[in-house]
Amino acid sequence: MAHPLIGVSTSTTFGKDPERAYVNSAYLSAVQEAGGVPVPLPPQLDDRSIAELADRLQGLLLTGGGDLDPATFSEPPHPTLSEVSPARDRLEISLLRRFMEARRPILAICRGIQVLNVALGGSLYQDVASDPGTEIKHQQSEPRDQPTHQVKVVAGSWLARVLESEELEVNSMHHQAVKALGRGLLSVASAPDALVEGVELDDPDSSHFVLGVQWHPEELVRRDPAARRLFRAFVDASRQ
Ligand code: MN
Image 1 (tube, rainbow, N blue to C red):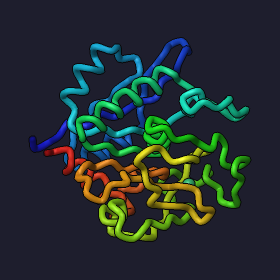
Image 2: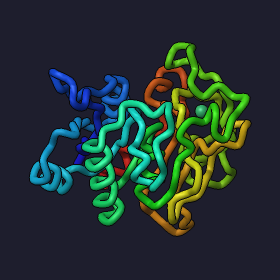
Image 3: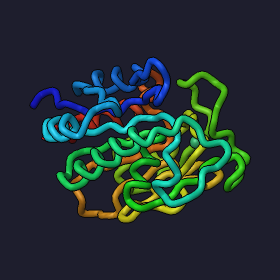
Image 4: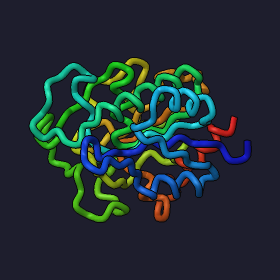
């Protein structure tokens, strides 16, 4: 198909009145500019809707948002925990498992890399400023499209090949990060403080497109060709 259908997970105003589902339009623009058709997936979808959609979607984009419920990785909640939505956790983890099984492409951004890691049995630092503690500001106050810290990408990794770069300047809008890696994942990008900023499958022979990044490439596509290449590679992989 010329223009693959890309499922895009959304945030929700969980338990507020009115309850809403919403997604930053930068994700939708980035998918469309790369040639895909974004299909927003609100956590309010029921099991039947999810099952029907999952069969039709060709790629899955897990977006940024609130914190995962730490129960998903068997840890007590940190005091800074915010915007937890068990419904969103369930939807994303269930879609991720379907896409892993069907070997369909997955691009996991910010909260997305954390969902990918936890769904595969990994854990998270629940507040990087206090645990593990870092000199780098990972929750920038600068505009969202402004890079604020460096990332080094492992030479020869899938991510480095897609980005065509082993050194990037990225934006940073997260207070959590990957701690113990999930099964079958490899850390392929890191910040100067060694925090994980990118993961891929630990399988050199895999043709399955699964990439997670802790920064926000959807906000960088106008200024950064590497960000455009990431979305283009993801949408292209979803065409098969
Ligand atoms: Mn960061």
